[in-house]
Image 1 (cartoon, helix red, strand yellow):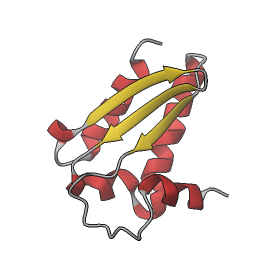
Image 2 (cartoon, one colour; image 1 turned 135 degrees about the vertical axis):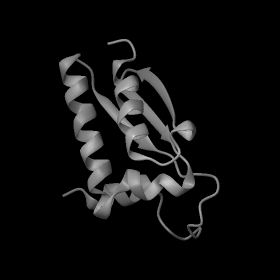
Image 3 (cartoon, helix red, strand yellow; image 1 turned 30 degrees about the horizontal axis):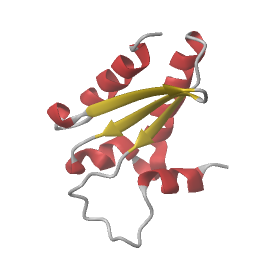
Image 4 (cartoon, rainbow, N blue to C red; image 1 turned 135 degrees about the horizontal axis):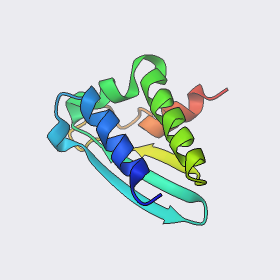
Length: 102
């Protein structure tokens, strides 16, 4: 599979954001599968998450399809930007996404 999943994620995210030069994807492979960690500009977080997390869910679904095609389990972690204005008491992006799962 090489880095097809990483390249796919970078392509999709860079097309969605206003600051494509700040998009960073880290790929780690372990016994659980592939973990892609996404970092974007703080101003672009809303575009990546989407209303009610729908954009992030769609990206994760597409990554699962890419993984299935290549016999791998692909997971996505979206990191909180350093310049975030979110309060410390608020949930992280991944915590909020977990709450949306049914």
